[in-house]
Length: 586
Image 1 (tube, rainbow, N blue to C red):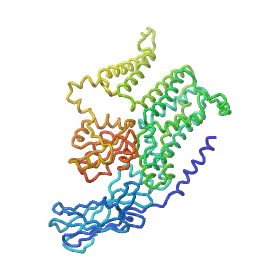
Image 2 (cartoon, rainbow, N blue to C red):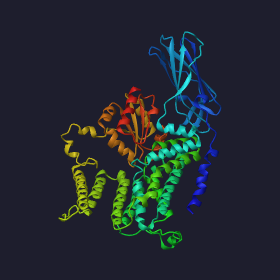
Image 3 (cartoon, helix red, strand yellow):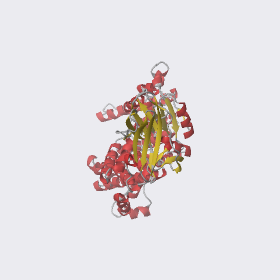
């Protein structure tokens, strides 16, 4: 039944190459650039624009080298007004545009640097294109021999989008499968491993070797199809679909699901389907505690609630879908990525019966362990929308209560064996860690990883370096433009949301790093809080082509953003420092 349901969807994904739209022209063919020295004081820059393409009038930028040669105000002809889906009503050029550039200064040999940006009528927009032309102003009428556009370096998201645009179908799928394998070992995905393991262990002796693998496969397919469908929908709507799900009510509901699973692990009750429905689904196997549809649904839920922040492969696929409308290839790539993420989960199902000893009394301890893991997952889900002190108390309870069940407070009998003493030692460590968190909450600490940090805050000169730098909030595009105009130093624009786990990690691990802080103190820091996902939030995200937080844009100067340095997803202190160094080098 499950295969019969999935077959049409899988077939449509495999036929994606036949559904692909016509490939767009490379930018150097769509917009042919040339430059000529009209006289010793005038340069003429020209773009020949292919049919079906256009350039934005307000996106041209010009500069000259060496420093003693300067440009006056560029003279651009009037363009045509166009209702652009990305920028509203704008002035554009079709077929051709010629810009006359007055030259000030005495230099004869100059290098003209020009920036342009355009789109295709089919809905594809190109990143800004850089052009260079070497000119001898002493030889009027000489055309540039080096008017070759040089595209700006691409960030990781744009490179992945370009892979989708220019890579072969099977290369794209294999690449995204590899991306998924790498993502499988990130903190956003690893929690799914104990969830699935707990479900399989909960079946006990009812799960055969093959049955465990089939259960894992149903879980992974549910996750993969949800990623593909959600990604296609997000690409078409221009927003991150999971952002609509990451609020306190939805996260709380999903957390309750894991709490219910955990309580069943503790033996409070046994989760079963209604007897009438269970009899239909249990013709060939004993399915106590679950079924293929239930595992499929659990995988779909996990795809939506685990990893709510944008990773580069997902953002790249969404960028490609949004610009081309080619949902078939984008969906197939996301499906392959999710299969890569699910490969370790399939291994859990395939080898679970081989790696685990035979069932026995020890299973009760294993079930209780996975029950604690499921409770930790539930708390991890809702922690971003809880007050910091309440989340810390939750983690403290998850450490203290298991410590008590490990007989930490009970005296050891004189004849206690080695394992008994070992587990009592583990319990003592858990009790100490949990107690330190309770003390930390009472002392004002809010970081579970440093619950006693408040003790050195008053006397330590280095404590301030662990604080998050101050960000000036921007609520809409208008405020952002005003901040750009007023900027007198390099600027950083950070996209943040309360439900974004990776945003919290960036604050705790990256922004608070002393070396990072030293460089951020030299910048103007702006923050766009898109928690509400309002129309203004979406407009801010669209301005930079982000589909959700975390996303960071850099402006070495108010007139120009370094698109090649954009950060999408979590970036650790070492890598972020390299990005900041590149910003200050311009």
